[in-house]
Structures are given as structure tokens and as C-alpha cells.
Image 1: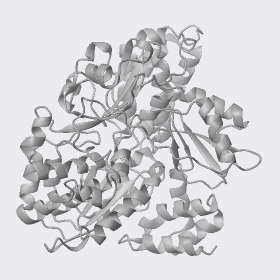
Image 2 (image 1 turned 135 degrees about the vertical axis):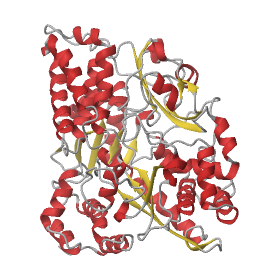
Image 3 (image 1 turned 60 degrees about the vertical axis):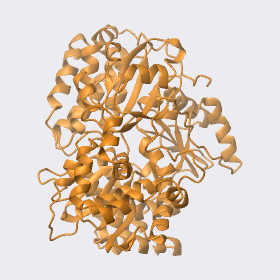
Length: 602
């Protein structure tokens, strides 16, 4: 099947971005799907031919990514999230309502071809839950009534814009978010008028690469993607001399349930991200960079590409930047729906046009990364923090936080609080104050039962830990992890067995299947928890669930096995009485109490 002129233009643009043609595979599959509605045999064969791949190689990639489909969808593909943050705000009730309203089930299409419906995993709307996407357009805080109104609007052919609300708090310390509320905050003119690219000029004209890295070490900047590894140390691992090109890769595949802060950083202030990536390039003498954007965030490609074009036009990207002789090229790349690609080595595999299967390490990406070259790989928030550090100094940044935990952090507060949102707070801000003062207290005045402090992969905390300072070391001491900074709050009417089940459904769905402990462990835990929550559990299942989860720890190629096991173990250990309450064929004791949550008046 020949490409249309538009698809041909996109294909040629993609070919110019990569040193190997296979890297264009996933983006061109998505562009073809956008244009044609699905991926037919003829299109798959044509793409395989153009990229010098076999049809089987293309088919195996399509089968891996959840956003790639070989069957037609409706004109409007309605994707409703029922993951943990949305579940707590009534996402499951919205899903049931949508099926009844449209008269179709999951992955079905209405007879007129207008609507298709799909239950999906976390889409990055956690602070404004429950969320759904119409194709790539986000809609937030969707109640059943709002869903019905949205259908009528779509039938009329008009799709209203939906911008996420940013409530703000007097407790915020705005460093990375200081330009969010400025007019045209994504434009280069706004950025330049508000300290933009000053750090890059300082680094290029006044600092050595070694000095940049030492500044990051002194600032106590730790990776904001989840692991909290010191950024300066990570960059120092890149060899100074390399026979292969060095690369800077931004992990914008933000997929941890409960997390949606990187989305805002790219949408509201893309030039801050570009400057941070450039500073990494200067620090390790790299001249090529990629921003790997999760498939569900594809609307951000237009914003990022526009900002990149502006940076090229003004001389901040390209050849001889600021007259210093330093060259750097940057472009975007899109994923296609795979949580596993948030793991850095799986992301590199995906960027190279393959299934996102994690690599065995060592070697680590700093030495052997993208296309076999030394690679710096950090997430969006980490790169965005670098310009402020270089501009204002390491001591200033370090003093914003706590010992060994410098700066501020974007916390995503979701679940049963009155004012869910994304807030920039100093590292070490107490969890209790985050819930009561920043989040406006517990929804409906109910008691707090549990908190997930760093995204769904982290062990839950109970109310006795609410005075924990929210930094990496303090949360670890409390028995959990700060992770991605996604704080999910649950009140007293929450069924923790259901929470454990929903978390395990996610990890079973997202396991790449490469290693047996993760593939089989998540599958069996999902089956057991499903049976248990339905009232068919046995007393011996409680110990079995815990032991099965423990058997997964440390036995998978990547952290996904641990991510599935740790919250499960903590829920069983801390809420064993709730598992016992589901025994003997008893219905869930919380189902009759749990009503869909609504946002409290501001």
C-alpha cells in the first residue's frame, strides 16, 4: 500500500532522526494507524519493506505495545482509566456506566462506528481522576453525567478543550514550576524573559564539564524517576573518551500509576527540559539527544517539537551554540503504550525499534547504551532541575531540601483528599501536612487508612507513619520508597484487598513476560486476589499470597517483579484482618460503603 503524501513526509522526517532506520518503526506505525484507523496487512508489509525488516519482525513489535492495533476502532476511541487513583475517585463506576450507556463492552465499537470503548491502565490523569482519553485528548474529573454530556458533544462534532486544573498551595516553593502560570509559558520568548538559557550560557562560557558534574553532586540532586540515584554521580560514570557517539536520552515515559507531573513540565515549560538536556550534553560531551515520550502523551509531541524548532531558530540547538563551538541535535520519539519501557534499558530497546525487553546489566547505559554508545538517561523532572542548579548554585538548591536530598519535588497528590493536584514542595515536607494542609484534608472528613507514598510500586504506609518527612531517606526508614513522588491517599472505607488486586492487575498486564518469576508470579497473584476478593478465598491463601510475592523479590531482570511484590507484601502484612474478613464466602465488607468520590468545593 503506497503512503499518502502526509505519511510519506512523516516517514522521511523520521528517517533523518536516527542512525539506524529501525528506530523509525514504532513512530511510523502510530502515524499510519492515526491515518488509517488501524494497521492492516498491506500497511504492515509496506512498513517492513521500507525499513528492511521482515513482516514477522514488525508483527512482534505490534503485539508488544498496547496502543498498536490491527482491528479498526470507532471514530472516537474512548479510553477509561480504572487504575488505582481513578478507582478511588469512582473510575470503576464510570466504566460500568460507560458500558451501559453505549451498549458495548471492552474493545467493542458501536454499530454506527462512532464510538469504541476500552478499559486502560494509568493514562497520567491521576491528580484529576477519574480520567479518560478521546483518542489522544484528555478529559478530567469525569463523572457519569459529564460522560453523557461529552458523548453528546462528540456526536455534534465538537470536542471541548480540557486543561487540567492546578490548584496551588501557599506551601509550594516554585522552582521548576515558576513559569507555569505565565502567559504563553511554553514559548521561547517567555522562557528567555524569565531566566531561560542563562544556565546554558554560564555552563558553556564559564564552566568545565567536570565543574558541572561536581555542582550537581554538591546540590544533592537525586533522580526524580523513582530510584533516587545521585544525578551527578550517574553522569560521572560516562567515559570521557568513546569511539562511539554519546547520547542524552530523556525518559518521558511517565507510566507509574499515580504519577502525572512530567506531563505538566513538558506541557507548561518545555524549554526548561531542553536546557537541562543541553546541560547534560555539555557535561559529558554528547551531541545527540532524544526525548522518549509515552504514547498516551502524544499530544505533547506538537508542544515539544515546536519548542525544539524555536531553540534551533534562536541558536540554542544545532551547530556552534552561542558561538562556543558546541553542537547538539535533539528530537522527540514516541512510545506506544508499555509500562516496561520506563525501565531505562527497555526504553533503549524500544527507541531502537524493538520490543521493550530489559537488557541484562552490566554493562550499564552510561558505558553501553543507545546504539551501543555511552548514554546519560534521566527522567523529565531530573533534567528540569539542572538549569536552576547551574544558574543559582548548588548550595542554594541543596538548602531547599534536607541532608542528601536537595531541592524541591513535584508531588502528585491523588485519591481521597479534598484538593488533589500536582504541588512543588521542598524535599522533606511532612506527609501529614501534605494531606491536611496542601491537600485540604481527607475527603468527606473520613479517617486516613493508608497512603502509597511513591507510586503503585511502593509499599503502603499506615497512619502511624504520617509524620514522615517526604524525602528518599526518611521514607525508606519508614519502610517504603519515595519513588516517583506519587502520593495516593486512601480513607477508612477503602478495601485494601481490592487495592492489592487492582495493583496486581496492572503489573500482570504490563509484565513483558521475559522472566518467569515476574510473568508467572503476577499472573497467579492476580488470579488468587481476584478469587479472594470475590469471596471464594481460603484461609491458607493469605499466607500463599505473601509467600508468592516474596518469591518474586530480586528474581527478575528488571524492577517490575519487585514493583509488583512490594506493595502486595505490605498490604497483606498490614491489613491481614481485611483479608480474613473476606473469608467464608463473605462479600467485600467495604463495597456497600464505598461511594464514588467527588471533588470537594474549593
